[in-house]
Image 1 (cartoon, rainbow, N blue to C red):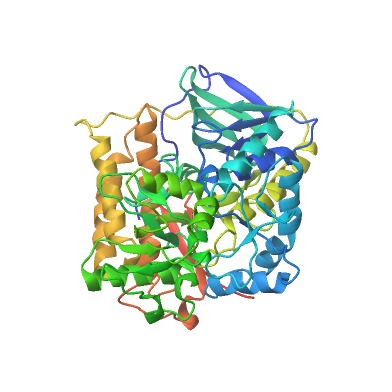
Image 2: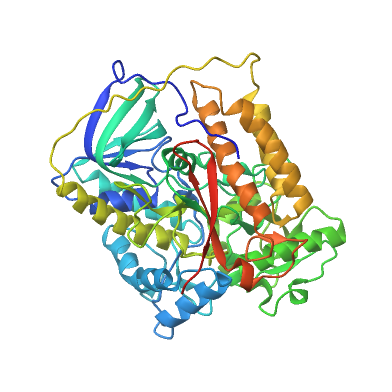
Length: 548
């Protein structure tokens, strides 16, 4: 395997500014802010985000947050739905823990100012694919993430122990024999900074930008996953990227998510001939789990030789639909689409990365003093396919757990801050200037074409050969701006996604192998894990059979 450099760029502790905090939180989405709330007020906390606070994937979430609120529902139902969606690869103990905390975490958000939609004085509950009951709490119809982040941002603003750095790119984690000691952070106005901390929490989100078709914001480039790997943390489940079935497909425009809640309200999927086709693939029709619906749409597009399918809401109450989905109504209107009468063109897109940094129930990684929460992690909650609206819930639960554990660990450590004598030498620049935009676009197209909804050995092998070639000349460069650093992180994450997808010779959840169309419970009911060899620098892959 390719030998990855330890650090992205040159830094010199003798000349770089140094900062010291008790807890460093990298990422300002829901998981990061929830972790920040949990830190003891006597500790100094730094939250670092590479863009503005509300530009995370959390803010883009439409559907809602799942939890057992309805009296006709129960924890066992939510647990069962999650396990079934995860295709026999979830950790049942983790699922049970997260599901049972859901009602309390939702009440926390309400106490902190989140205004969820109500009906007759009670929380309005939606239903989405894979759920057996109405249990999706939502806000402003289809803008749940934005409302939650609004409330969380205002709440954390009140906490004097928290310092926020926006527009700050975390290049790498600082480590020694004792574990994680902080991070190397580039700030546009102050260059490279060394941030030293007693405890560090990684909450940097996913990697949807690796794909040409994605619902993710521009910031979702896998930075935290790549940095954690370079520092020696174990990665897991890298083959599992979830594709949302219904991205608005308008040629020449940015892809926009059409929330699963639309199908929960009764929208039907039809092809270009007007045929409702989901009955050919699953008895649950449009409310089958995302992996099944995405796969069905891909096959239907191939059958019809048409670039998309359509969502049909024309049979539903028009006023109710406009009220329930104001954001989608507004977006579609820009393209002269009336969602109450016109079919909405949709196709799958990369949505949620199930793989990432391996963590336990408290968010503890394989590196001492490093914790992680949210989409950057592989927690065992989602298995091989995430149940709709469990992601915001995971961020709340794991943000709270990682924050509490890191806070207690920091309280138990003396204020003996000390910088390490680390130096990353300057390497020779590449002989030819690189067109980073061209490589990035080529990467996104390669991933969509060869590592997308449907995969094959030949396509994955071609992708692996191309990725190895790109890595050998791009990862050895030292760039001085975000475009180069993001590209290197994207290549690093893509490398492991391709390798894991090629290794897993079966179909399970979001990992669909056309050459291995069935699940293999005997050989593949296991996780694939990667870690960096400290002595040689290359990646080591191992299987982890489930023991539940």
